Length: 421
Ligand code: HEM
Image (cartoon, rainbow, N blue to C red; front, side):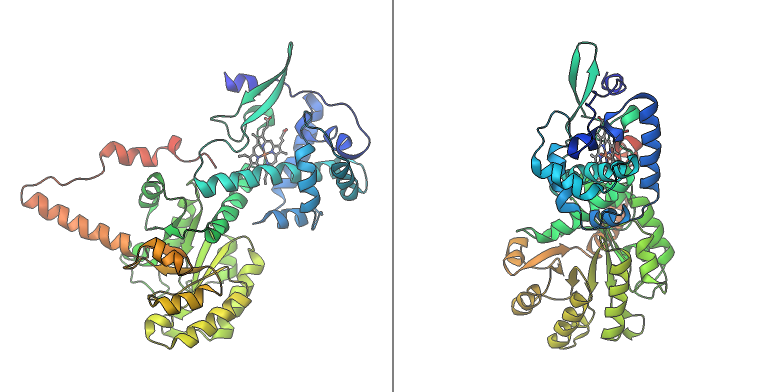
């Protein structure tokens, strides 16, 4: 029924030659028939031509750099049933320059992107499964009706969202970044394959990381030697399907160009470490690497792992490295082995701090300033432990508890994959 309703024409808007009225009467969103087909092709082409990780980059790619403040003024007045403010009209005129169809398409696309993507990011951050745009409108013979978008978060039919893939990527980036600026620390479980990640998401975790030990060891490869790059990249490609942000442990880049690697991953976050298979990177070398990655993919949360502390090197060196990496653009710092409250507080002042799960409650770590608690390889090691324990229990005549066959099938069935994309 909803699909039939969404196939109906969209309500007409009056023609306008200025401000929001001009914008409305020229964008794809409020047109029908052949006009719609032409404008839709133009919009789709604009979207296909961009490869960006943030809304700011999208604005620049659409030749509207620095325009998001104006877009934020236009967005609440964009729908035909909303009143137009003088501020919104002025914002459209500032951005428009020439009043042609392509200009309207670029502004309209950014307006559509801005409001809905911010809403989706917030839903992803909080795990809200409702459609971020709850209703839309259609024209019937008896007047305009509201159509619920429950079950169709990106619409359906001729007006279905052409920006879905791009929006999902940007919203996941935004949500993941916001998860590092909450009062309570983000609890980030680390998965080693598709189903372990899907099970963790289904259990209510809003973001999932990968564990380099788990991914490498599951393929019979030792960790930390840069040898499991192919496997980590293949897993990242699978995890893109999950309706939550994913962060990928890249060790030190697997001997590849880390900037290329990150730009091609489509992950909301990455861990990049300064440990190398045979020692530590120079601070400058690692800071330059971080800067290059952030330049290519500014929206991807770069968690700079510092490998000094667990090697017994003085905390001052860890702090100096943390400062250098944050100055280079790192969004967060990760110090494995960090447990001393005084050290935690000191480093938490520099940037969102990630520590491994330890013998302290999340609340206690949060009070010390920690913003992210990861499980690292713990879940993989626990799974291995339970696998062997379960086999032994069977040998001893028991049937231990496990996910059912149906539970696992449900985690990998296409219908369960994504509200967000
Ligand atoms: C990069 C971000 C985005 C871009 C560029 C974008 C672009 C567009 C455009 C141009 C349209 C109008 C298409 C037409 O009328 O033919 C549209 C429609 C739509 N978009 Fe998006 N959008 C973005 C993000 C989102 C997000 C995050 C959501 C919500 C999850 C969303 C939900 C929708 C829906 C429901 C419609 C259809 C409305 C209807 O049929 O009445 N969009 N989008």
